[in-house]
Length: 290
Image (cartoon, one colour):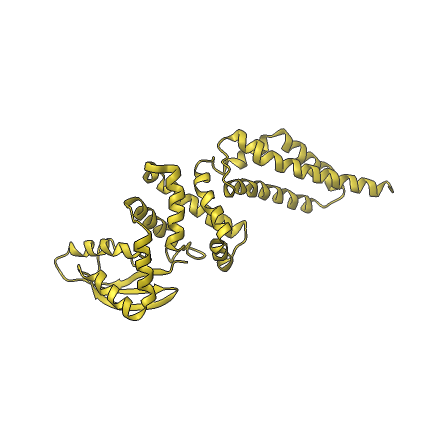
């Protein structure tokens, strides 16, 4: 979770200021710049959260002294928040690329309207993700920014749907050092891999898959219901996707259809086919009185 969040949910209209955003402290400069384009004096309501607690809620004039106003009030209400701001200033260099990444991330994933809950990470974790991505994309990070956010969103959905993580378990996963390292490996690896959607068009064409299907739907239904066989088929497809994502978490790229076939899909097919054959042997053994 982000430790420090600045919101400005209402007040006088300033073009370019989003009432639903969770702003970073460095973005106050941009808000001031936008307000200075108007000749009139503008005020906005600012609510600041630190460690999930409101430490400031006040209507302030948006001018060149805004940051100083906010900092003084934060210092009065929460010295820990000022200490945190100073630590960030010492430890993080906010390059133009990093700022663009953080803003784009928050606009699409950290926003309060993100369902079922915002994908909100502390600034240090976001910096670590950025460093991993920047290492793999370098000067092309601007070109890849939309793909990076799309990959983060895909990871978010995967953890919620396939890994079945609720909000509490999601943040526990992100706060676990070992698991978060997997996330850092996942993003650049996914960017260098073919899309997971290729799975649906690849496995049905494989001979290994057809052989497994014959055993699953032509032989196994003699001993199990068709619904049970369909459940097995659905688990099989889920496991292909899980294996694909496991590759990403372990920093192993799937850069071509051939790699997708040989290192992701076929091993899962062989495992399921072997399990089905063993199940058939057990039923045959039982029916023959062996």
